[in-house]
Image 1: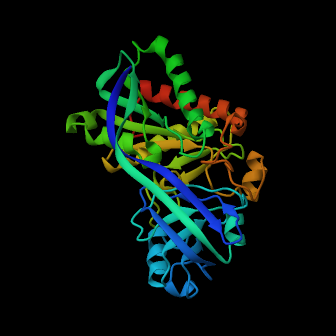
Image 2 (image 1 turned 180 degrees about the horizontal axis):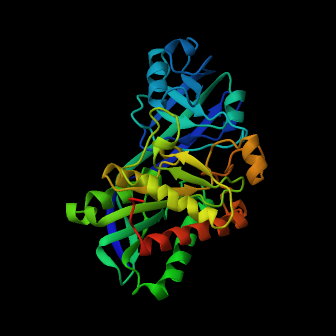
Length: 374
């Protein structure tokens, strides 16, 4: 086992509160890396998406807008032009009490996140207090690799170690980490005989936008990057309302013009990952690269063929998916994503076992054959 120190900017929230003029304390989550502020005044919801200044009523101090239609940064520009001094964002969702913290991302106003239920009940005036600070910090990436296998034919498989700030992170992402560890244990007795070197990666600070994996890729020499034949990534593999998703690394097999594709070879990686479910006789669906933003991204930017699998995140399960995979249509794949309820009760045990077997099959296949030309 080896480790790599990863420097990054940590963000610490010192206080986050909203108290209405009626004396109601509303749960708010401050945007990471956003500005601190104390804003007092009228609370008003946007009349539309919040992407235009005309969406915000005159005299608004604390604006409230739904996510989507444009970036949060764009909403803060529109709200600021309308005279607002802070923005509250909520996610329209069947899980009306969920609140997901995200990064500020170029916002021009202080931003916090609230639940849909609270957003729809806000009126009158209030006092919003947001206080946070960033500082230098260090996390680690952890690696284990086979003793055997060619050093110029490296198969990498990874999952992130950290959780979101507001939840235990059992499905996201302890399920994938545990499956990857079990796969490594099962491969260990054969590690001197595999033709290709297998490197297991456990990433730090993925939730802060792929910090650990980006640092790793950025510190490789051209020769070290060229030796990595492919990278496989797993996320949230035991979502309670799961669908078996395999990342579609090749857009040539579907008609969506402009759909994101991985580097050359990613389609072959997808085929092997899909085979991990087919050998079990299990149905699956493909999802494009943007459906799961994770540690495969820096590898893809470096030209390394990528692939991955996951059980579904915040998307809403369709009736067709429920008919095939079970579960509840009209509800998120993981209703506890980045929530305090992402604990041991948030794991679909059967889906975990199926995903683990598919993972082991794919890693074993690439350990003995990393030819992506067929």
